[in-house]
Image 1: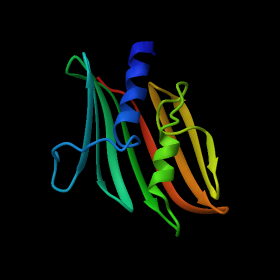
Image 2: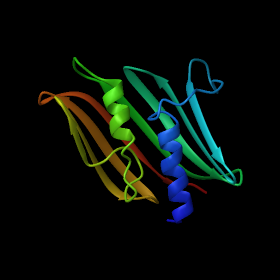
Image 3: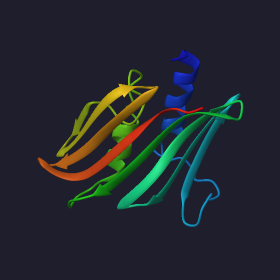
Length: 146
C-alpha cells in the first residue's frame, strides 16, 4: 500500500469519528456523516444508529472510489463507553488500518480486534469487555473497489 495513502487514511480516521470530528450534512435520513479531504484524497464515514449501528467507510482518489469497509455493531452489556471505543480507534495500526489495535486496556475496559486478510480484502471483529464481560461487538469487512 502506498505510504501517502496509508498516512491519509490514518489521519482521516483520527480526524473524524474517533477524534470526535464534526459531522457534515446527512446523506440519508438520520445518518451520521463525517468527511475528511486532503488534496486528491477523500475519506467518508457514514453510519445509522447508535446502540445498534451499521455503516461504511470509503476512500476516493481523484474522485474515483478506491477502497471501502462496511461495519455493523451493537452494545450488548452495561457500562459501554463510547469514549473508550474512540480512544481505541485512535490507535489504528499502520499494518492493519481498519479499526483499532489488536489489544488495548484502560482501567476495567479491554478492547480486542482480530483481522484476517490485507488492505485489498479483509474481515474482522472487535470486542469491548468491561471487567471481563463482553459489552460491545462489531464485525467489519472490506477491500479495494473498482
